[in-house]
Image (cartoon, one colour):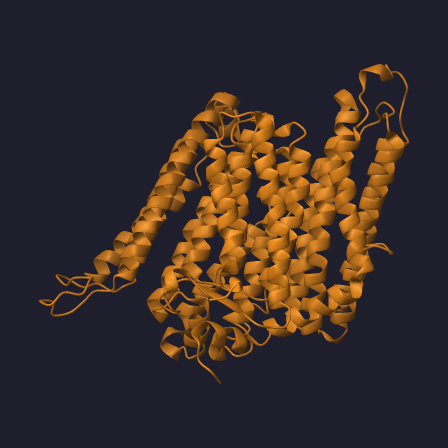
Length: 114
Length: 505
């Protein structure tokens, strides 16, 4: 289970970094999204992996999982959701203002020759 | 409960509530919005002064949000450093706003709402004593800054804004990774509690804690625009609207503040196995940043771009002082901080006034028409240039002098002295060239009637900022004494930890 989670976070991060380094805005936005997924998972498992135990106090519970990372992840998800919405709108605006979807505003053929 | 008990939360609540109120007032006349925004910004000054007085004797005002005791709840902590930063921010905000209400706030929508939310984020970041809460305030101030940066729109502004947003989103992700790692290892996010737990790091976890600490440093260095993470700054600051650029003069200092706070509190002398984590990195990188910022200032083609590179150079000087790490050096940095903020903001505002007076030539460094009102503009430019370069008699000189004196017993002394003095000379050459190009090498082929002289209202904020710099010189004694006391307090994090965690020695 630990290895699986670690692999998932690693692959998501690697894919996110790769996409964020692309030249066009759409892959960059996707890369940022993948990175935020990776970090949300990472934060979540920082409370350690526990299966079938509640985070809040109850009489029937045999053990507890750490509730704080879950709260942190909720905050982080909301923030990254808002930021992604913002960056998508900004990318659309840049597409309209710059006339193409390159992050530096180059034309496609020009960008490829670099 | 006395009246002082709720004082620490007010600098955070006031801009937030004002921002929300302004959102409700958006249908009203512009004069009402401007009035409310300005009154709220002005009210931050007495608040900051009250907090400064309360913290001046070395007490830590700890405010537990929702009355949840640390380390379980989030605390706001006012110490000398936080109060100092609050006062600097409040003073800067008033002058930036005074300049903005002359017209540039009408270029886009919701300027005043975003401005207040930016102040909300800034004040919160200076006050919070919780690492995750710091992340949240960072996001607030960043989101407001994205809106302000793009305020007014335009091709270059959108391009620079896109880079700024994307790089800061990557920074936020790294911040979360660092915070997550620290939580996973120590089980706490309260900075004082972290300081205690990190000092007792078992050898097994040492590598994890060190990588999290350095990852945090990378994030703060990105916000502070430290080499090699400064590349977003010149384009963003040079292409945004001028009052925003002036307000952003404090934004890079948030990064510097966080570096100072986290690495004196959590990775300072008492941190055992993780003590002095940054020592090999901070001072050399700061020296390189200083050099590169000045080179950029020499090579700039517009005054606003030059001001942006001078911000990079000033962050170099500031972090150099923090990187040297002695009481005297940190005190020099703290004295230099408000000076560099006010001087950079004055230069940004002046660049706008000059660019309006030159018509189509704007603030480009090329021979243009003679400006109407050139004497006043030139006089202000001269004072601002003297302040930024660090010539006597203004406070830049005192700050640099204190820094050089503090560097005397550092192993980096030859590097610090040669680079600080050499970049001072470069800055002087750069600004002398800009001044002579803008004011002396004029031609009269243009019809002077098409150019408009700057109004007194436009120049008043610039003059006000320069008066603040003069104030830093006049009261240099008490202010540097305060900076010295602040540095001494920072280097004894034990008091901070006791104040927050409530354990008596």
